[in-house]
Length: 242
Ligand code: FPP
Image (cartoon, rainbow, N blue to C red; front, top):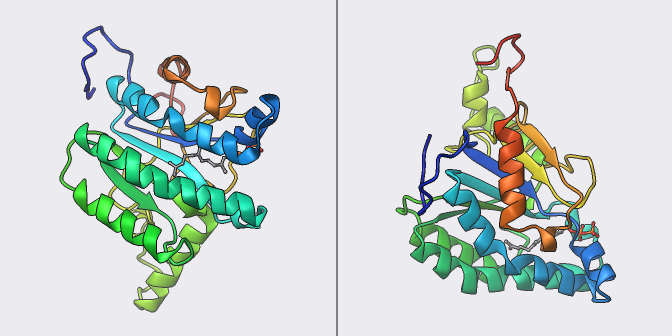
């Protein structure tokens, strides 16, 4: 098991890759008599602590679902606020994560999020590219079906003969190429659905749903999710555990 951070206590088996749907910002805001936008901004605040909590427990890859291809359907003001939030995260959080040795990646389309943000993403990805700490992928303008569709399109464009195509080769055409499949997918906010997140990659992921709203999700919740994962038996479709 890979360990990082300064924790010396014995740890239960950690998932290599955790992916999170950060849901519940709007309801958190409503509960606190704030605007939905303020809920999203609050959702960013503890990002750094959460990344560190996963890293300290030995997680090597963390993927966060920040904006889906369907989120464009939200009111323009909310979309704008989420784009501004992404710009702020890149400006303020990325350098801090870089100092901690995190490698940052982006999953999703870059042609609709504005040139400034797209270029800032490229800079951050290249700045952190050689880092050896946790790999933090931010899914922004990401959709699982679109990811699969684009992979199929690129294979067809390249004239790839269909018969010998393997799952591994298909996976190399996805946005997540080079990343292991998620072992654990967490969804906060109490909804029980996938919402177009890592549909191919999550085929055998353990699912963990919590009613905790994303802005309330903290290091204790990270530990609880990882302890629950450690107690599960993964069989990957077989009768015995691997
Ligand atoms: C879903 O809550 C959350 C989002 C659409 C945005 C998630 C973004 C963050 C937490 C900020 C982090 C940003 C970056 C760039 C890393 P919701 O609005 O669907 O909540 P609701 O279900 O309560 O309405």
